[in-house]
Image (cartoon, rainbow, N blue to C red; front, side, top):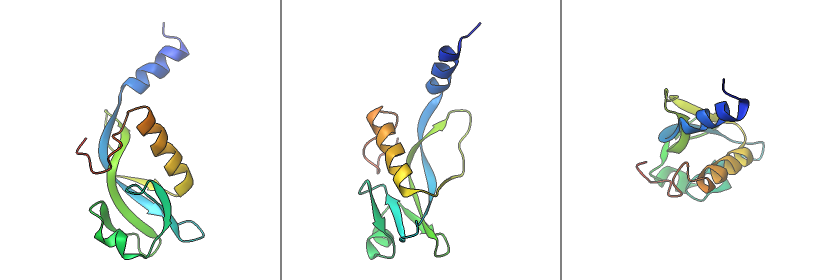
Length: 109
């Protein structure tokens, strides 16, 4: 019989890095998480549109960006909603620190 810790470790072992479309919704100040800068920035500047991670607009509510994230090896989501830029920055920093995803956002994983 598996104890809780063993089950959690088994689930962690099934996590892989994959390029996923992120729906980066702007916060109340019009800011989103930027994976290239690994920071929170205002949208509406041209650097988003010139970025190779840029995948489109969310009808004025934010931007879509494709970059590596941690997903289950059982199946990948088509997209991941990112409603809170600060939480996303913390999440990505933790995944990079644990070497689950590459530090380089342009990596082919």
